[in-house]
Image (cartoon, rainbow, N blue to C red; front, side, top):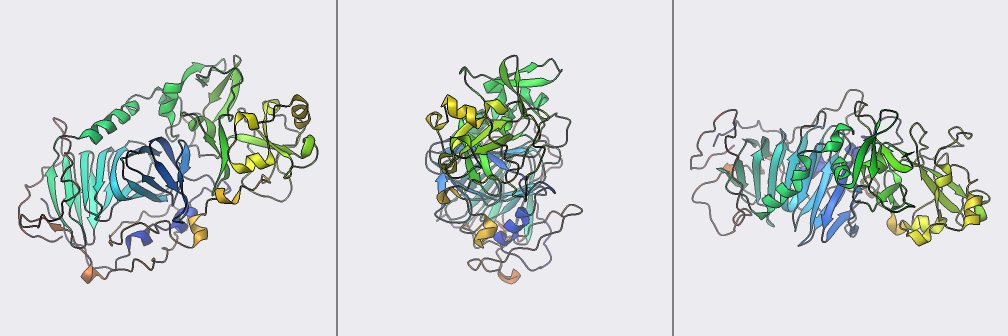
Length: 520
């Protein structure tokens, strides 16, 4: 294989010191209250899937479809479990036995750390999506082009990287290797990793499953009506229909048969830092219509009107609702014995940022909301619990009449969650988001320059459990020799590889790999 030039000796940082939660925590857009930041979506799951929010080892909780994931969040897939995670311009498919973390989901760059298991990644051509990097115990791999990629990590840290389509650059210590269409790189376990590059073989059952799951992205009709930055629009095709309104605007109608159905009813409000209260829908399609756009009643049916596709990239919102609240019996200010209500916003209506506490009321108190009389109400204690059922909603007609006069919440929502439902943010815990992950292999990672006008954050302190390794002692990738000991089976030994597509074009031919020890 081609041997790349050797890097000049430079001080190396430990892998996880490069993934600083402080870097991502400052990556919100100006004037947004710190919540309009990039997120990923847990789009689908099967079996036992757990999510850890924050850095507490005991913080694993069952995952849920439509759960937002942000910097520092981790996923653990048990045997028999599977999950799909969507982020801007890419989808991650997680196999059973996989552990994956997102130490960086910022506007400038995105990275995932795979410590065990198998992940396939489909990267799409979305302008401005930003670079994407996947880090394993043996390698840091930059995905340079749209395409199909696969990563396999053994329990001992051995790594295999497959490029079915696209181009990637794998880096470790002081060297890097470019991988193209139809190639697979196999790296033995640290501390002295060796590698070789082989042609892809036939795909296995996991590859076929990923192909089946990916088929929905080949033709997404909803993409003609929704901005490309909005996640979850593939689900809209399967669960609803698009119709043109009298205002010459397209609206999406969910296929719901219940006469009393309305938005923000099937699900619950849960507490997530940095947003505070956020809507988590039980409906499989309940991402895009609940975090973007507005709702209206069109021809006696609820319809979702998305942001115009030509508008600037829309930001994720915790929910597009307005809260109302009152005391016992609908009288007085909202308190522990009172009631919390909410209703969806119609086009053009102002969003009151309940996640920001301000001194005094904000907004126009005389504004008339179109859906105000359709608000849903819960007792304060049940709302704070973070889960409710249909029977928990207020149905008493007399009480509902009194609650119709409840004032709109125009500053911070005065409802605190139950303590066990509060996520500990990485910056509050004092530990980096990568704490507890199982690798200390130093790599050289090219940092993306900060956009103009944004200060470049300082690197986080290096964790005590993973001290920097001097360049003279750092492991280097070495081309694998035929004499390498077969005592420990590498992670790819029992995993067939997919065959390259017929007629796949390469920008330049690669030399045939030659045996013999060579250093990068």
